[in-house]
Image (tube, helix red, strand yellow):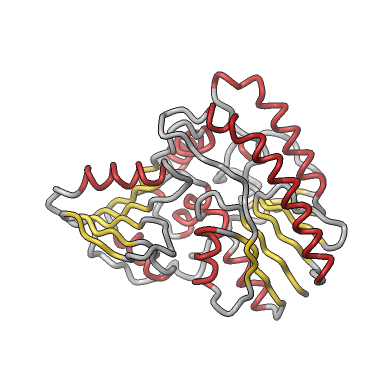
Length: 317
């Protein structure tokens, strides 16, 4: 088969969780083409240097520098809907000039098609809304459900039974007939027995949209640069020009490959990261959830929910 894989550019998580699917298709002898932009495209090029890539723009999403994302997200709504229409048209143009058997969309709403088997990947069958907009939670869920229904299949990367990793986000409401749980997706599936790298007591993984990514990085530097032990900050910038720098006792690395990252995470006494779902799947796979402090992006209700849910569910097992 010929497979087109298209992750959303909203941090690196949507791209990283596509890695095991891409590896599986390649292992089965299928041809894979990658379509992305920004850091996700740079990351996938590093992971799969021999695979053809297409530059495929994402929605214009920008977070606020404050503790609420309500107005930032409301301002983004027109760009998101324009982006959905634009990416749907872009996909049709691609399929008009070359054949694909399967199109895989990780949280891109507009990539359904009748010209190929279309698969949508999401862990968020419902969207947690801020308290002031809770009245919109069900309408937004139904809108998302409409987009999911356009696809031939919807893959939910989680367990169907309890305990699971996504909680209400994918288990609260009945599923559409095209939806099924496929288990967690992690690029670290083959690194569970890797030798730990114990050079750093604390390892922080920074990711997500700007400006919150940079604010998180600066706060971590200020917090740990004068400590009497070594801290590593992985900046989530795979195409950065300066791959490594040092500030006090903090080492900053723009990016690590999978085996290096798995080794430092397993070897750390403490891990700090955003409570994005792909990171949660990675840490669950590496058996590191119990030593992780999840710091939600301020005002990002999904991450706030997941941080509380994972802590309550897995710290007590």
